[in-house]
Each structure stands twice: as structure tokens, then as C-alpha cells.
Image (cartoon, rainbow, N blue to C red; front, side, top):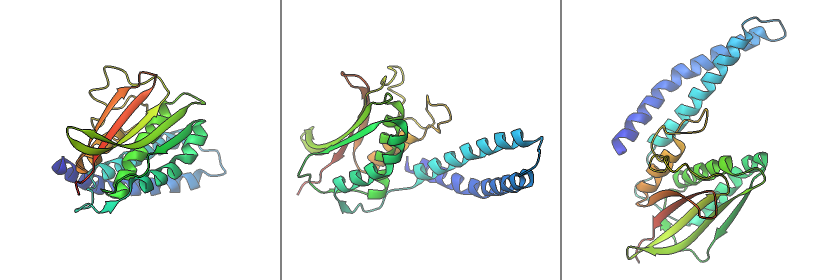
Length: 223
């Protein structure tokens, strides 16, 4: 995964230069057509949409290839969750979805890359908002648990939508797998990469009460 991440990151950096040139050229053409009848405008709109899609893919590829800090510093996960909640507020409001957060207290400090872990949680919450029902909600909770004789922080992100297709569950964290039109298919792959780089694990399932459920387990270092 580290080697793949490095390769993907290098590729994304190489693509940025021609992509910037394409975007700048489209900007010039847009100015040229401004205020006049332009028979090629529909073609420009098509090109702009595809360039924007490619830009989103490059952004996600860079995130996928970017490594976490080494060594991981100590941090508090509640601070990361608070930042994530602030960053998704507008998206949730636009979708008519309520995001509720519950962090058990007190939570032990863990080793984490706040920026990268925040990106992973943001991807999970954004994905849950997209799949929640209109007027529904997304639940984000963090608590301490024990598994296989080890201590973990259990982070759950749940929505009240239709849930995952059963045939998709083995593949939802695979790179470039997406059921969403226009999606890059890297959002949940980035989540898995970041969680595994933190020594944790992630799983997806359907909540018995309805909706999708993603669980992230992050190890709590022994004193």
C-alpha cells in the first residue's frame, strides 16, 4: 500500500501541470465568449465539467498517496471530531441532513495524524450525508472498547438511508469502486489507507435499524 501510494502521488503531481494549462485555456475561452453569442459554448461547458471531474480525481489521488506523519504524535480524537463537524456543517445543511456527535468522556489520548485522520472522518461523514434520507440524520460516535484483549477507540458513522448493497460490502473500501455518479471512488479507499496507517481497522455493514454503518477501531497505546 505504501508503494502504491507513492506511485499514485507521483502520478497525480505529474498530471497537475497539464491540468492547470487546460483550466487556464478554458478560462481564456470563457472570457472570449462572454457577452456574445458563442456557438461552441456547449462544448466549453462539457470540457469544463470534465476538467473539474479530473481535478477532483487528482485531489483524491494526492490524498490517497500522502503518507501520515512518522512518528505519529500524541493527540485527542475529540478535537479531530470537532474540526470535522465544523467542516461538514454547510454540506449537511444544503442536503437537509442533521449530523449529531457523541464522544464519550473522558477519552484516552492516542497517536494520530490529526490532518489525515480528519480527512478520513470527513470522507465518512460526507459519504453518510450523501446517502442519508432527506430530512434525516447522520450519527457520529466515539467510545472506548476492548477487542482481542486490546483497547481501542471505536468510531462509528451511521446514516438512516437505504444502506449498503449486500453485494457491495466486500468492495466498498476498494480504490475506484463507487456507485455514485461522478464520484472518484477513492473516498473510502483513503479512509482504509489512513486507518491502517494508524494501526487500526475499518469495516462497513448495515445497521439493523436501517442505514449504513462504518466502524473504525483505533488502537489505544498501552501505558
